[in-house]
Image (cartoon, rainbow, N blue to C red; front, top):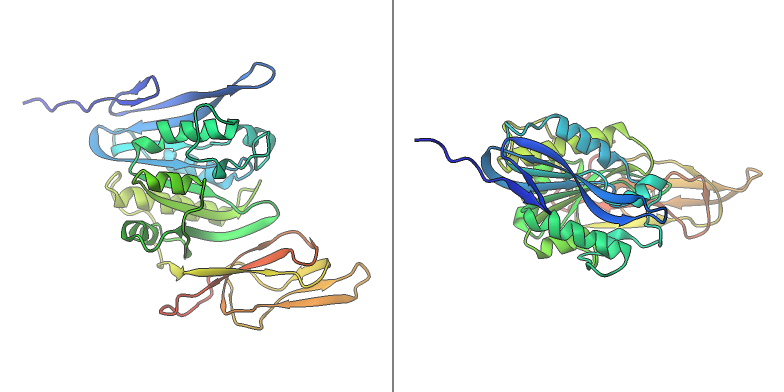
Length: 328
């Protein structure tokens, strides 16, 4: 008896046959010059039934590491070798990507515009398109980010650890640290979670840079999640487990001046550890900044010039049941 062929995957007015991959452009808008702008999507539709998983990057246009992560993942995934359907959206904020800008031309943050509206602002329309054509068809999603401008982040997962399914996927991903984070109003993660999808947010690296470690960690993590869902065979890479944190704290500059950091990403520090020294342009010390808590350095500024009150280091408090250890 012949095996019934799997039905095509339909997205917008496109059909992707089983065992094929297809690159699709979903129209967004036109530039003032009349040039069309489209959301680039690649669908890998397996021959065998399975989950529908989406992976997206560049929700903020200057966050590039995720674009490379998706390229590497797609290089290791075959339409004839997967169960289910993988939807890859390497660049969500196309306008910002083309100009190297975090935001859209009207300065709206796309990640505060979900679930969006077909008749709203440009950000709202892009959000609506993502929700309708991508998220609404998926059961699992991975949203790839880097730190914002002039900051760098240790590879990390941010997720609602009170949700058992989300916590399980976070453990599978295997980032150096997983941070409990409730969803924010208007974010893709919140809107997707409201549809019933299980969503991980991955942070790692710096804006407008390709950082090797965050890219490698993110690539392996995505592949591990795909394997866990049954989409691909095997368990790519290895993990030493993930440290857990339920709270974080930004440490701020005590005075204005020129910043000299004394800490590294992933370093385990104790209360009172020297984080930075601040000097004036003539070399006179203007202040010292010490850690107010025990924890792990998960992010810091890359900018040597600070004003009093500027955020300079991000510290994750360790899980009381899990002693802090250096991840550097």
